[in-house]
Image 1 (tube, rainbow, N blue to C red):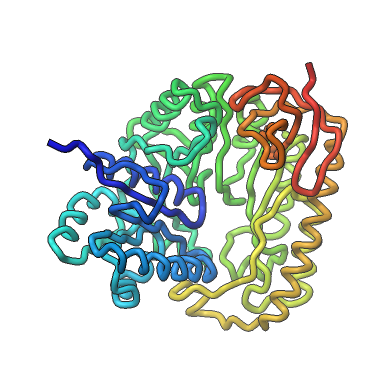
Image 2: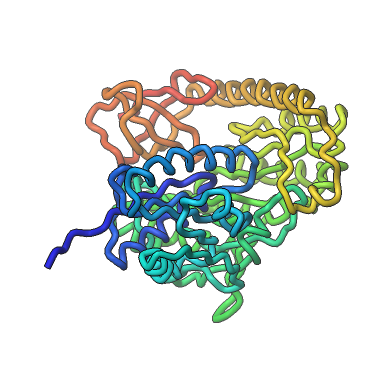
Length: 443
């Protein structure tokens, strides 16, 4: 009897949560005899795990699907599935638009994949986009795809109920629900035993994590529990909402050496008026006060953010408020985008997308230019400092150099010598670019 496994190819778009979801899907498919394959042309099943948070993300997926259509023509037995947020948002419409697609699976329906594959093998299309109020995939051990064996993600919660007016996540990922902390700690222990040195806890709004069933565990408590797995295990988290950055959380980070001194804290707009329209539930002043608290308790904390240019009704004064807030904080890194209206969101229903495209583009250009200045200034400020670096890989530019990140999430490149990925190395910064620190190991 043949033991040849069928080949699965997963392509992931969007955020870290989607990467984590692809690893869950890989585990489920492994259970029915599929193994990971890195070449789509050799695969028996191709899954595209999608993102709907911005229009450009969906356009990229649709362009990629046209390339996969060619593979399907060459191999009619190929099964093609669309997973994730785009599947949830468009549902049956995707089958109509992309008639060669065999199955559509929303983020809460991955357990149904074995039965859906059987349906496709029987010659029928399969769709399941039912959202759940309980599903967390807590006991499924993810297959770690394409990672470096050093850093791994652990999804600790799913969904979101902040209802920011521009965002599709509550519609595509459902109600916020947290995972049993015991399963999170067991997964962290298992990863550490396998040699992983760094874990990133994931959630759409990770610091709103709360568990009240067998015991009360909030996010600062969970963060400390994961850090206690080992002092040699670094802990990060993403993504935070400003409303949930409590003093208790900041204190927990400050008091634990292996919880990284880095917070990704999206502010989206520096204007209180725009924030109100976005339904972000905080003001400019609240955000600045939280930044002040972080810098007071964690003076060396790395900070990054998300910024949207040109949201509905944004004036030039609102835009200047965004630029001034960027200068106030001095971010190390930022994800910066033009506002793109997403169908069915609150903003699409209530507000006109009334900022002209050329104005959005000009404002985004100014935001990007300022962030380049801030990042370079931040990196220059690190010259002469020494950091503990977790080596992740050989540098792309030279086999004689290694690259890793410090606690502040900055990439540092330094001579290889006898070090290897997975080592902790003390590195003194000697130079920098806007994107990278350059240094020498300290013997």
